[in-house]
Image 1 (cartoon, rainbow, N blue to C red):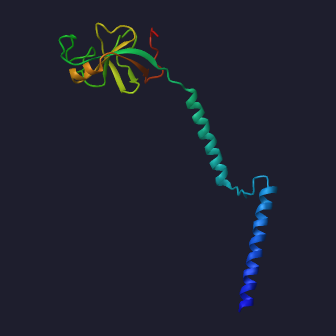
Image 2 (image 1 turned 135 degrees about the vertical axis):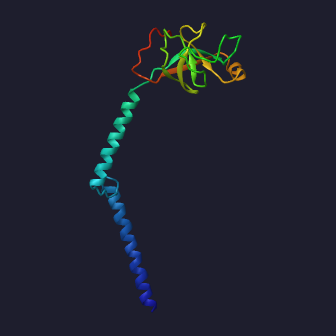
Length: 168
């Protein structure tokens, strides 16, 4: 029984040595580093899909959105000091998401994004809002006061919009 056991161990040892030698030989002399590449139709599809995704990402990177620098102030409804009431210049009721603009610069009804704040609609005007200035509506006087006056970056959601006379 011992001799049979030793023969099995001896055969397994030499088989393992031969396998290691074959792997080393494949790694050294194989152009792809010893890896066997099995290619089928699925691989070709995955490669073509990856190429398409890469092309789409490249095109998306080329389309750059223009951001414009504006000075923003804040207002709230029915503030006698600011001379505001609860109706916008377009006739809608003031609400969060409304901005006051100079209609010679940004047409009323224009959708814009304020970087870091979200989406807004230009539905109001103001006597002091001229050029690259906007006024952002807040529900409370406290929030409006807390916002104060800041430099902000905006972009136009409708990329085909031609905005007249933007000052830089």
